[in-house]
Amino acid sequence: MFHKIQFFHFYTVDNYLSLQNHFAAMDYYNEFANRSFKTPKTDLKITVQEIDPELGIDPLLYSEFEVEKDFKLDYIIPSLGSLSDNYMDLIKSNWNRKNLYTEEARRNSAKSALENLRKGLKDIKKASFLDQDVIKLIIEQLDELEDVINDIILNPYTDIKEKLRFNWHRVDIEYLFYLLRENKQIEHIGDADLGRIIDNLFEYKETDGNYYPVKGSRKHISAFNTNERGVSQSIERLKSTFNPDFFNN
Image 1 (cartoon, helix red, strand yellow):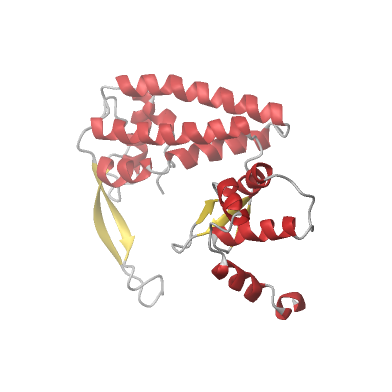
Image 2 (tube, helix red, strand yellow; image 1 turned 135 degrees about the horizontal axis):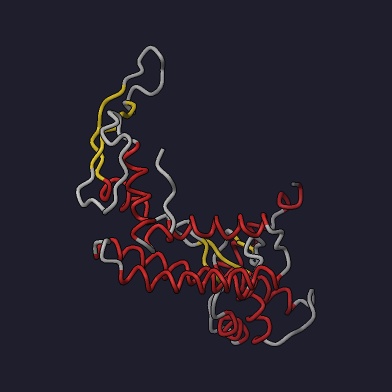
């Protein structure tokens, strides 16, 4: 089984060679047994055995076949897309190992991780042993990870959900809270405050099946006040949702 690749594997030539040596050790015929590369190989290939996916692992049908694997094309490139997630696993593992549970401890840990990544980025950009397409993909992962870590610095408790996800249209969420206010079921607050709360706390479900943050609620609520925004469909959907059966669950 191939190792998980981490950013540090690309910081130095020795770290990169550790990946090549690990990859070479997976060769079915042990062609590279008792050998350790001292300089990176540009065309490293090995032979592995794989199970025929159509036959599965049934002992009566079990069938293996040989496949040639290329170090860069079959190991490095496919693994680069997981670099960001792998690094986040390391950060969270470090939190658990060192009992970093306070906001300050997690925030300091994230800042230290970000500083280390930025130092590593300088080494990666200068790495003559890496192809440019590999460097480009690594930098993309670093950019993605920097955004994630900056979010942790702002909110160290990333494992705690901050928004409720409604399986509703966006306007239905906004109109529900507008109705609650107008019918005095909640304390009266202005459009700006109500819109800000809705935007900060809720997500809605789009037709593509994904959830998105509610945005611009203040303007929409103001439009409800002046009847500038048609809400007849929202009213029907809300009535359908809050039917007598809703309260029998």
